[in-house]
Amino acid sequence: MSRRTPFWTVMFYLGVALIVLIAVFPFYYAVMTSFETGTAIFSPNILPEMFSLDNYASVMNGRNFIRSVGNSVLIAGVTVVCALFLAVTASYALARVRFRGRGLLLMTILAVSMFPQIAVLSGLYELIKLFGIYNTPFALMLSYTIFTLPFTVWVLTTFMRDLPVEIEEAAIVDGATPWIIITQVFMPLLWPALVTTGLLAFIGAWNEFLFALTFTISETERTVPVAIALLSGASVQEIPWGPIMAASVIVTVPLIILVLIFQRKIVAGLTAGGVKG
Amino acid sequence: MTTSKIAKGPSLQQQRVRAAFWFLAPMLVMLAIVAAWPLFRSISFSFTDATADTIFNGKAAWVGFDNYIEQRVRSNGEIRWRGVLLDAEWWNAVWNTVRFSLVSVALETVLGLLVALVLNAEFKGRGLVRAAILIPWAIPTIVSARMWGWMLNDQFGVINQMLLTVGLISEPIAWTARADTAMLAVLIVDVWKTTPFMALLILAGLQMIPRDMYEAAKLDGIHPVKVFFRVTLPLLKPALLVAVIFRVLDALRIFDLIYVLTPQSDATVTMSVLSYRQIQQFGDYGEGSAMSTLLFLIITAFVLLYIKLGRVDLSGEKS
Image (tube, rainbow over all chains, first blue to last red; front, side, top):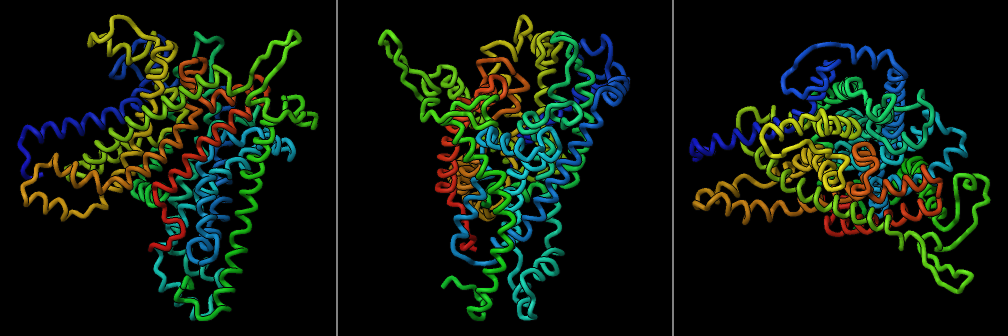
């Protein structure tokens, strides 16, 4: 850094500016469009031309958008809590207890998280009809477990492996059972990891599209991605771009805020799930 | 030799293994219900003539490999072959998926590496840049598909407007509708959305390279470009390889972006999209499941490759 000539310093910062511009511009443009109505929306412009909340009002009043947001929050929330609950004990066993077949088991779990969703679609559809939960939130809670559970187990296992062994030894010497070790000793140390893993799994469930599209039929049962994907006007020529952008902004802003708050933890969680293995 | 040092005797180890079994059981039962069983059923459907009507009443008949490849002898003695493996539409989808995966992952790796190198340097406002590049990643795929669909709109899109102003194009382009630009549109959106993920994974790999390596190279007066190719890249290779395979697996199953951005285009339909169409639109569970089973086999091959090449430390024995 210190030996860099002024020319290269300028080039470097130009590159940085370009990266930021490309990353941020599409969302900025969506926000700008969401405030425009009438003819203003159809004239492409880089700077804001007008400010109106009409699109937001029409999204909030119209159809079942708020209901969809509620569905998404409920489904993603329940799925993640259940997955975390099952994953904490499972990952303790996988990270801390040596038993035969552990490697194979972890490999299988990893493989499940990389499943193409389409490969289980018809089988899941049959199962969901069998349980009588088609077109209900339960169908999605059940099907989302297929990716949230392996993911949370995998990431929590890598986190749990890194906890110092001395703490556990001390607890064992004091006569603690594995259950006590998890709930009393590890949980207080693990909660940042739980928050991170839970948040990532929540984002995954919040964004899921294929299952939500297949396993719901009525508008009131839709989740947000399906609602936005199927938001359309009277004809192909009349795609309501303003309301679509407003809806997009509404569901994206909370995610962006969460991601920015938990920035560092998310990066740690992602790398635990991806690179570290 | 594998007994941990905390095991004082067989009884403690046995107790721990028994507890481990009960800790694992609920998760395994759950995965068996939501993953193993549906997968088994989907594969089974691919050997039947199941349709939307027969799938639930058990009237679907076993047809062997007919959905994959079937010989039909006509009354006049003419032999006809059909099935997914002979379907031009299927091979078009395979080609689209492969093309998409190769190009998108290649672009994301190169651009991700560039962004990661920038973020690895120390400069003012680095935290801000890191936050900014997380935004595309945080936006749901469906939302980014719609956002870009709007920006790439043929009549009112800002991209056409910009390109017209600069003079790169002479008339507006219907990016998502034209056969020759639809794949480009999909690639642009996917690269935009996924490069941050790649950059963060690579950055994590970069930060594991000891700083004194660079210090030593600097003291020896070695040109930075040479340092990059001789020091950084070889040390980064394991992390890079795993990230690439991880992304390839993701790219091979792409569905939502294409379904929303270019719904009707034959130039972008992928294996997942075609299989979904077969099942949902045409109610052909047999052929649709045959397609999804083929995709599953391809991805399984890649997972095995990932585990072998990535030398994933599965049991944690290394540490």
